[in-house]
Image (cartoon, rainbow, N blue to C red):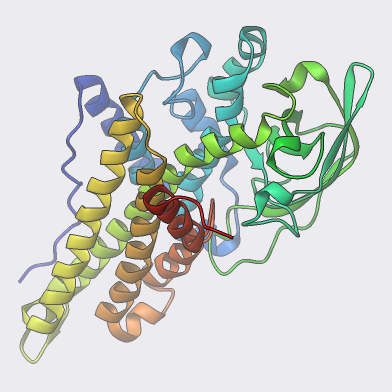
Length: 390
């Protein structure tokens, strides 16, 4: 049986414009991202030049209003673009998802004046964003965050530390959640903080098992002064803004997970149809054939789940439960598929000569970011059975 090249995913896209968009993304992937992905990840290189290219190509603001530089694309299309990017290099796919997350607050809750002033540069002007919710002592319990913003005339002064910030230290702007009032969710407000603000400094990037090209770092706010004109939404509305952003962001993570899983399946298929043992391709053996079939089924099911949630969002219907389900299922599927891909390749799968070991390391983080999968189960259960009794 001859070697097979991975075939592009057959996508159901709603418009000819969307089909052209995916074709553009595939061209950028083949020319600019995939050929250097393994080398740059191994070297820990952050591909800022790729994000600049994506911005110039109109791909950093796809789900946002074209009046402010966005692409006017439904989430159904935007998420499939993320999947294509993540399949080539998760650092890029996840980076685009995080950037979109960072733009969500201003796009959804900012004033028209704020949107006109800031969104064009954020969506299509070459800027790159980051989202600052987690802290060293408040991860899953995000409502307990301690970073403070104190009013001083027409400014706010922010003091505290944020943790696990994707693009920490390289972003041009940060959407920051800080405490402006009492304890709990109602005391939190959102701010748009410039990346070069005085008093803002990043720690050394975390040393991670995967996504080495994507900087993740703590950010220290030492009396960072932000004008009230950069407050997003009302005082005390920040946690609601954060949760709204995370519902959409979880769909981005789900799409990225399916992209990584698809890339792993493609590698496994390519290897299994080309590798011969006992006089025939190993893809002829039932044990491997069933494994490949299970991998493909998990991917198709995950893709259908995140697209169903995206279509609810596009229709203006509630989608929080479905977003949590998609994030949970797709990231668990990615972990299983990438682990099985390593098994298909045997000893070669455990070496860095093939990319499946990188895919497996990258899949793990997707079960953690933007709400661990244990938190997703809590969210789903609350939708089904109501809040926990105490």
